[in-house]
Every structure is written in C-alpha cells, then in structure tokens.
Length: 124
Image 1 (spheres, rainbow, N blue to C red):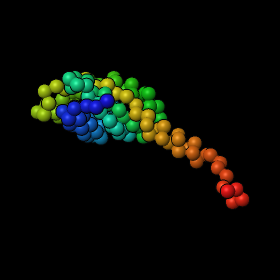
Image 2: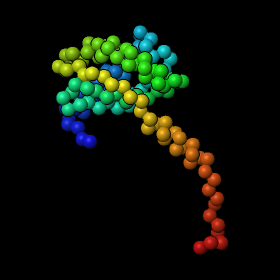
Image 3: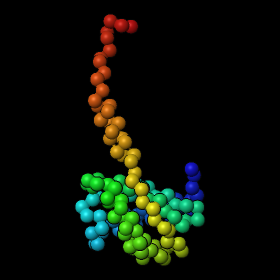
Image 4: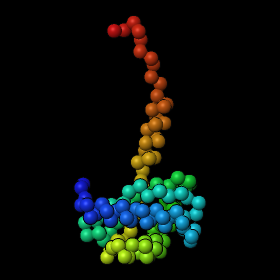
C-alpha cells in the first residue's frame, strides 16, 4: 500500500514526536517498559494514526498496550501541544504491537536449533 508524500512526512513527524514523548514519560505511564516506535501509518485524511510499537523490557506486553490505550487522550494532548504549529489535524491514535522483531528472533532461534550435517565428500 503506497502512501502520499504528505502522509509520509506526517508519519515521520508523529513518530519523532511520540518517540520523544515516550522517552521523557514524566507521568510514569509506561513503568519500566522501553518502547520504540517502529512505524506510523496515517490515513489519507490524516485523521487516524496507527502506531506500531516494539517493547523491550516489558514482561506483559498486552498490559503495557492497555496502559497506552487508557492514557491515549493524554498522549494525544501531548502530541497536539508539540505539533500544533505544524499540523492542522491532531490524529486519533491507535496502538499496535509490532511483532516483526519477535518473529525474527523466533526464526533465528529455530535456525540455530537446526542440525544440518556437513556435506558428504564422497557424493558428487
């Protein structure tokens, strides 16, 4: 799915600002979880932003995702305070867990666990 240049620029702006908001996290919303924003996808009307996050130190990722959903209005307000001079629309936020990294780690562990015998020199 291709997005316009406008959507891409807006996505990068939201990703940068939300990363900074989560890094500072004065309210303690996230606890000790380290969240990285992997990707932001914005709807064509710029009204909805889907935020894909990766959580490093979180034991219960679903609980952290629920915390984010509970504090969605506060996070959106903080985002609005930061980008109000650069954007007319402050999008609704939807958080999703990005499972690409986890799947890659599972694949790595599976590949490391494979026993592949060395090639037989007598076969040609």
